Length: 265
Image (tube, helix red, strand yellow):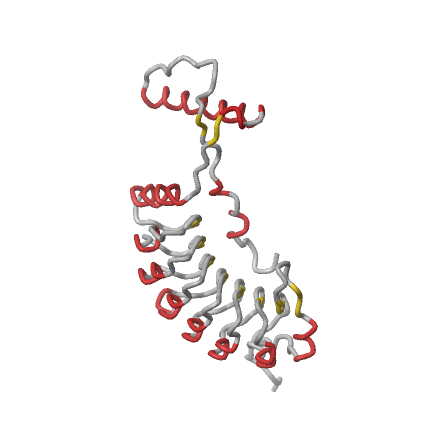
């Protein structure tokens, strides 16, 4: 009988030496432990001896579980767990009070397995929950008052709670490719995202000629669209553009960052 039959892949064994050699200095001077794309199937216990790092990257592995010992990383402000096989998170994640960035997209997380302790991360600015199996978002996430960006794309959401949409500092919310219950709700979500985006007002004289032409072309398109929609002629084109313009908002700037097309790009 063949040994090991039916068992999952063992994955790469991470030693303390390998972990130490994987520490990098981030642009702001912090210490980053980068163990991404190393075929890890089990959280390496040896890295608990390096728990004083500022950033931990375990993305693009085959991890199914994060142990409660993650609480040892008290200084951690940046945690990347995307593209693993996580089905839940430990309650201990709520002890990481310095956490600024948390990326857990492209896993197997369900709503019931999101720990309530996530709401304890009061310093969290960026949260990515995209590409999971979430059918709802806990209203308690509205307690994350410092949150500026949240990714909810590619889940099974039919609605987004107002407590999340109305977070005071929220600038970017990506909820694309969710089965919202009807077209009306989809329009409401689109409107809420538009309200979240930053709006820039500038004077005509502050735009370069190419930007000004682009804005004028956009206005012409809108006039034509209104004409077709209302069946009435659009007002004659004015020789000059209005003093206040609204250039494109940054809603699509980081779409490629949120959307992970492949587990192993």
